[in-house]
Figure (cartoon, rainbow, N blue to C red):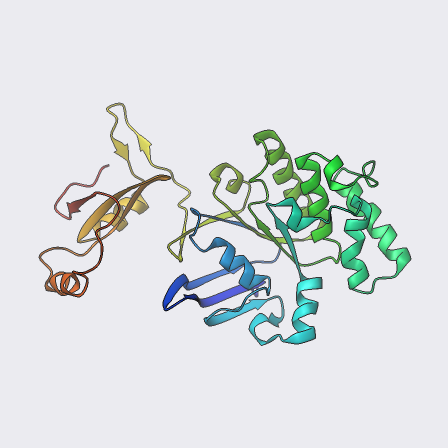
Length: 306
């Protein structure tokens, strides 16, 4: 089966003054038609940059990007505008990015169809169907200010689906909602995905919300990884028990760095002090500022937790 979304070696570099900021470092992943994928990671990891590229709102510095039968990087002018309007839908965390305050829920949903040249009769029919699908058929006349946060996101989802896109991009769609309302929105997204055959890519920092997806990827420092379905646990003595896949990977590393971050603890490979290339690395970076966190190195001879 041909993947619906294909990202190959995507690099995105922003220039800030005389400096270059690397937001994405060779991102590679694929999505099947109808799949829901969540990408988790801390603020500044590059999550929104990736969504902007897939949505045609920005262009990568390098790489290949395909959605459906379109090479997004080859789209220009009217073709790119048509892609944004018809093939991809957006749901943002901020209501002001999703909805126009002076328009009712009904008129917000019809607007993308007006821009796409949909007939008046079809606009009305499709808008009623969408508002009913998101559970707001009795709230069609209300403006965003008269709706709750959860209702606003439901209208936003209807707006995103107005032109029947194949790909829905959701940027922290539950970030401004309370826990119960967030769960309702995620259940709605999964229901609409099944009914409409949507492919959904969502970025979030909330692992509980990411759990509604078929697959969870991690994005940190511009690099993409995958969340292992097996979770570490603690034994009766308070020691961490690692899944076999993680133990195997750690055992192959010459040294392991343990970094304490606000969102948790990170284990990753580090060069061994005994490796001559490590000394070369130090000489190249001796003027670099010290890392913000304290580090502890575990050598390969150290027994990995089991």
